[in-house]
Length: 259
Image (cartoon, rainbow, N blue to C red):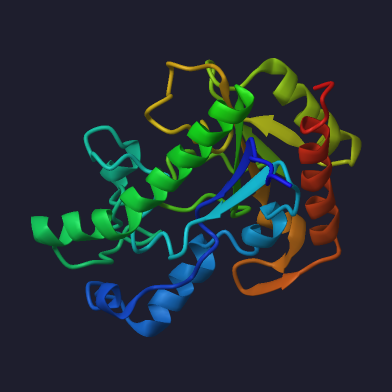
């Protein structure tokens, strides 16, 4: 039997806490400070929330921490709004805007991008290309979580944050996709807002604003929903399983031939 080619890709960029030794040497914070930063900024357990065992789904997880490089940022700081906050593709500042990393030589920056960033984006692009070739469509679900209160580094400082943030793109996020996702979470009693506190969604640059066969939506889950007390206590609550089931249900609905 020929293995089915997935057309739905769950993209999980920020769940890892792994920092290789050679990258740790670049970071000028203490071990305790680094652990605190990882607690604050890691998207805890999103690899479990968004990893779906389904023949039409491919799961792509970034293997190292966002403190190594951030695969959700543009690799050109001139294009990346968060670079002004010291957290472009390579973070130079902490969440409270203190120095995180020593200055890097151009060769060190290039080495980080070549080892971690570019291979990851190539994998995502390859998955989308295979989906388009096999099915004529591809859906990227960009899986994240976020802290309940704004961080000093955040561009959006609005204090009242929803349970669920859905990030959309005017070209790549069809209204039907928004409606299905919104209805699922709202019917379960969760508050939903769009592009607040975080906006946009992941689309490979090769297809961005060029090919509307590639759909994408960002699903951000407020950590208060599924953690007992973040960032101090990272124990999962009973809501974790409910959120996991809702994400799985959303994907099962999207994989239906009628949608």
